[in-house]
Amino acid sequence: MQDFSSKLLENTVNQLSKLPGIGKRTALRLALHILNQPKEDVDILVDAISTMRHQIYFCESCHNLSDAKKCEICSNLHRNNALLCVVQDIRDVMAVENTRVFKGIYHVLGGVISPINGVGPKDLHLESLFNKIKNEDIKEIILALPTTTEGDTTAYYIYKHVSSIKPSVLITTIARGLSVGDELEYADEITLGRSLLSRIDFETSVLKK
Image (cartoon, rainbow, N blue to C red; front, top):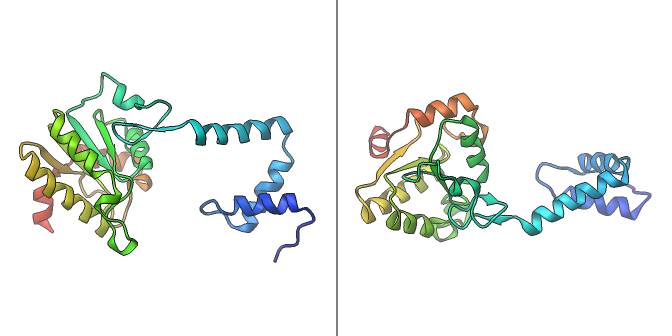
């Protein structure tokens, strides 16, 4: 048990240690680092965090993070609105954008179907996805989900529903350049870019398994 000479320091360490991947020792180092910074810099940091938490939006169209009700990608008239990339979360949007090869739009599910973790279809942004496909001129859907059992289950669920509501839509998946169990955010940009460009028909990928 760490002995703190200051309750204020102890409280800061306790709060910082709630962040993912931050243990008590790392939290203490961060707290002491912050304590040694100019007060003006600390105020800027605190204000940035508070402003982000209170003013940031989730895009009303794709559920990506945004400074406005509609994100810059969905608002960009130069993007291909007929090409829709479905991803697990916001970090995957960043990963795909970093490849500089994708010029379509996105839909962020907010997770994947995982019964063991209590996550079902209703817990994800699936209804808005299906409504988008029904009501907009989507020509191709790229399922860029993790190469895990949960990711494959979610991809198949989407495939079955889209095939029933709009059979004309082409459904593809990124090529398996990623190892089984990999998530998009950990793939290097070249590998992910090649996987996107070499995408294959989803039904074909299922038959190969």
